[in-house]
Image (cartoon, rainbow, N blue to C red; front, side):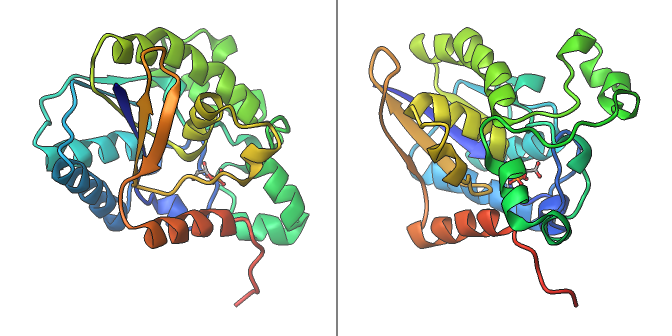
Length: 250
Ligand SMILES: O=C(O)[C@@H](CO)OP(=O)(O)O
């Protein structure tokens, strides 16, 4: 039986501030770093070890992976970073406060922007897109750099990474861990679990919790489960969903 472990980064500064992050390279908070270490400890306690690690080119995911590998005493592991595992690009919403955006445009609109399958947030103006000047994307054809993304767009760039890189490694017997983001993981989970465009709207991925997939020989998922306390995980998922609620001022 093949296994894969996915983990969303721990709490970032903009998770704490409740701001849309997307491709902004926001760091972890102290709590986020502790969540990464805790996830690694949990994996170690359950007997997990890995052969290769994959993450995005954003430091909140990279640093989460470091915490996980540190707790596993596997910091020597080969690590592949790839933009395809980045958070979905949040377009012109990047940096805005989610509750203030909900107060301004309505919670329903914010839920559409955050969770709908095929409606992207308003785009950045091309000239204002910092990724075009960022050396980490220098090897990328500029036409691949988005000004905004809906989940469908994110699926379209995450799945080639699954088919070309992750799936062959897992099929070849490698034990793979992936540290990524709420929406790049939603894209992968949607594909793996065959979740409909409608149902994916309600899926929220908690910060810093290992998600284990078990596959058959054809890499069809047999089952998947989070490691850790079920109530705490449910509370973390609800907290993510609630980030899009308008809050009372003051
Ligand atoms: O801001 C973001 O980039 C993501 C993940 O933190 O947020 P959301 O859950 O609103 O898609």
